[in-house]
Length: 422
Image (cartoon, rainbow, N blue to C red; front, side):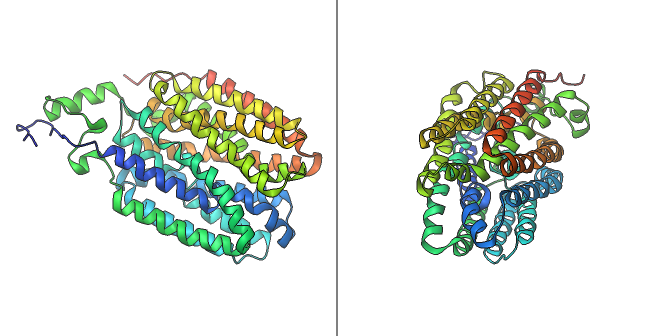
């Protein structure tokens, strides 16, 4: 290895370790999908039958999880800015696993809701998980969109394989033992991956963001990097209307996404579709998310993230209208595929838009401040849709979801990147 001159950045000939971080976080995110994040809908039917719970109870459980995430989000964001992700991710994974184990012991709906609240406070919610996305924002700047697009498919892929595998596990051992097994295995997997592979920031290994090898002195590089990307403080960010509009738009998206996750299998079962076929149909939306993210990857650093998000919202709205008129298994598969294509663009843009608009130095605190706003809307929207499903049937609920997504498109259209303060 070439030795750097005094004051110069070190040149590394081996692959940039940031890509190891991306892969490790992808594995951790995929594992979390098996722990009631991506496969919760598989448990709705057997738990309803055994415990006598209605759809609204599961809607409130999802709301409790989101409320827990909203409570802990600001704290987690600031913690990650100051302490990094390595140890907090490991601890959070173990505690989430413990909550899954406890879910195997419940006898009443209020216990499920309480455990959902605790699980939410651990901070795991797919591609919105701060533990997973904030480190990538700190390891990459000019290649951030590409890195996010490499990481993102792990989440829907985890959903895609967790649904049928969880259904098989429930069929084999029952829903209680399934919760127990998934909690133990998932908690250990996340903790091990985090402690072995994750590092908090490039400077911990003497590296620069994006794996840059430059001849500039370190002080000159730091100055030019700050010019290229201004890092907003939380207070500055919250003074912009864009901050509030983006938070609200993604709250709508996550409410619909959560509704799909909890009720899509139950919706397909109501059409007379067998459980295994319903689980496969639900998995379709996860795998089309992967395809969507791969297709977007070459363009994500070249196109404004709000445009990617607007296209995703529109595609999901179309999926909701397909579901509203569904009567056969084919409609269920088509709606799931459309929803997956839209979620691929919508959720990938969420991981990219915040650091693209507000920089990386305080991104944990900024994302944490936005979390209560986003998740409050999500927590309100999901049980409302659940109540609509119970009272009027699935058709009206899916139409309402399409209307809400249209509002989200308008909010994003009004949210260009804010100008940095002088």
